[in-house]
Image (tube, rainbow, N blue to C red):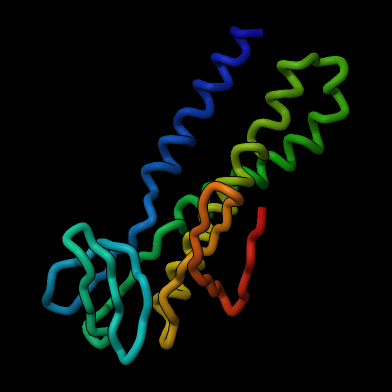
Length: 166
């Protein structure tokens, strides 16, 4: 059994590295200025508020030629892997009983990796696109942990508000 887990972990490691390599920063290309890499916080009055390693920076949208939003690569790879995984399940699931645990694990593994990668990619891409849209407000998150601590922030994503309680 341990032998099977090692192979699964070796298979998962490249995907985990890929997901970590695809960060949450956008690359903003500007006219006659160097690219800026950072998290787009909000957009208002023809300006983007970008959180960079050096601090917050305001970028005039009229100077922006392209924005490479984060998450698009992870979403694409996750979608392809999920599609392959679903096809793999359709074809391989009927043979799971005969093939044993390792076979069945391999049948479901691509979809198990692809679905969260796809969801993370689309969510990250969507947050960045929304933050760069005209009139977006700063995206904050609200968490309440009872009774130990309380963190309160507001979050509006694609026009929807959410409240999480534990």
